[in-house]
Length: 523
Image (cartoon, rainbow, N blue to C red; front, side, top):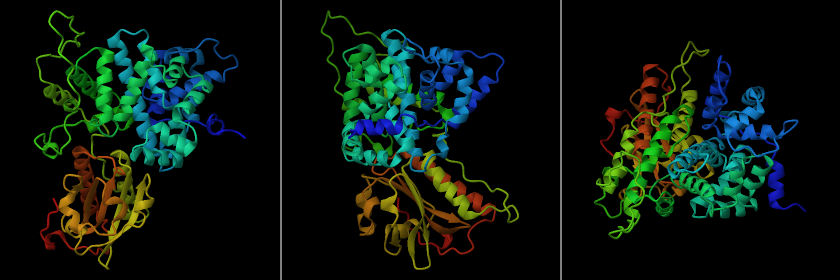
């Protein structure tokens, strides 16, 4: 009887991985250029984990596969040729055509891969390690099993994510759901797919060698910060990266913030979520004067001991890093340079009126579905729903998209005397979180269930100055941030304006007009 590793390997080994539409387009454009080098294609594939893996899988399918291991993308593309590259862009499925529950998880996975590859390559350059391109590539394809599972078995990955949210490690969660760890499955697939040897070393947890250790640190950091930067794991990783680079805490924090901004700018054309949007800025919501508020990452990590007089000083950071600056100034000032907007930094565009059979007027229900989907995908949130206000004075779930949506299927609550009643009076949003939940405890319905103890965004949707319903979004327990809250509100406000100006508000609206509403501001 086959074991779990053999079963999942057989299930996944021949199934295709998806490609981002932006990557397919850039590859086709480069193929159409009069002159293009293998390095030009490799530069594009740095941002396409799925297609990078497909290049190596295609090498294995050649009539005469390479006898020696291939370590870099330019070398692999040179051995493969351009025709298979063009066929791959046409044959590989697009991420957008996957099942709805698979798309957010795979986008996060691809975004992590791109960031970990960038971290690993840059750290290798700082350390002076040989062939930093090979180190970056190993990090890019490291999570190959998770990419394959999101593409072909999203229900299992959702179950693994639920266990992760409850505190299990990725491998422990996978053992409970799949019967095999993600590392072992990735290693088996990497061997079969002809992935670079350094990938096999890092997946084997060979942390006694510098090159695989660089890959392991980069991939672990990318996973740890993909939702929030300040947590016990990131504090430990900071200390390990300090030792790896032989830099002090302030230098490493400034470096990571700068690199997160650099890769977010470079990868903005992909539209994938990036960790830069979870940086711990000091705001009113996270004041360092409150002991209960999260502190900047630099406060959670012990400062390294100052060297004794006469001992050699550690290697310095590149020019531009001033040792005299404070740790806090470095941690906050560097990300501010990343003001260049990216697709994730901009609010989702409100669905615009399009011509239809009814005289060029947009169908409100169709546009509303587009809005809910855009909020969930563009902001990288796990769940988003629209609950309509009915004549019976209740809010009932009507549209629901995202991951692990089953607990919200029965979202149906009485308006009167609840938090929702206040929200439905005016188009103002609420970010419900650990710092303000106690203020609304008496207003949260007793049968609230799944959502009541999670960080969430809520805002009434108004059309022609009347409340139509409520839009709710969360990350299924993971913390949210102020930037995403502002984009959430802006998207809903723009949608309301477009629908009102185009005359496509629903004919029957149960809610009151905003100017007739009771002045009750939940914030």
